[in-house]
Image 1 (cartoon, helix red, strand yellow):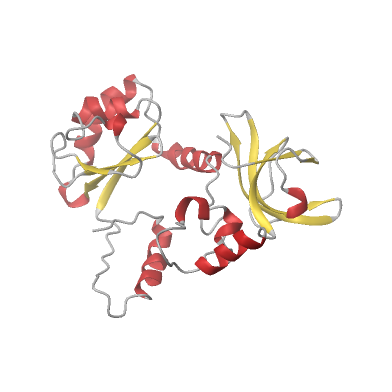
Image 2 (image 1 turned 60 degrees about the vertical axis):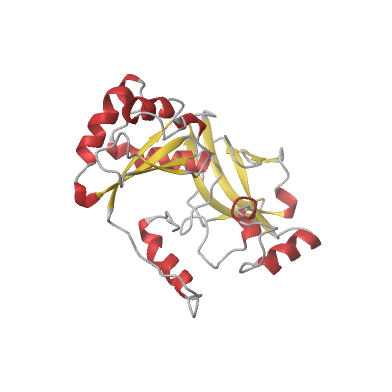
Length: 254
């Protein structure tokens, strides 16, 4: 079984893409949207909170789990179908919605989490996650690019999501061609800013010339200044280059 996690508004499109390759292959697709309640713990103390609330992750400690690994909370959670995903400095917990476990899970996590400063108000969570996403230099479908509208090499995602050794995949030839012949006309870079950036999709203009397109931006608490991602042309994406209150940098920011 493979469980694919994505934004709610992208689940339908993802299923359609996968279904397009479903001719005689022996697999089935099951949309599990809405079947789980979700909890996220993220931060330096997240592993300690998981350990205190649920005990070890089987024979391992939570802090030792490799990224993207999945464990059942069978030993410590109220339902053995509750799953925990190790993800980027934290853990994503999925509990079966039909079991109504969310209040109990929160009750198990909250005392240790509050003691370690990990609890945020729900209304601020989306803003926090968006800031962390941008600091991590991760472009978002529907915001920083439209599916099918950019090459992997434009976004830098080929370094994270594509393998050069696993065999064929859709678009492999184009990715290989760009890599062997030079570089993409525009590539996603980070910009350290003196002031806030325009909305994503806005042309980035310097001295009357369009040099790129703005992508996501935020104020980075870690760096103490506004930052943005942008698709920049070949002449304006060298790290350290400065122009009109902006300095080019490689991603991630943090």
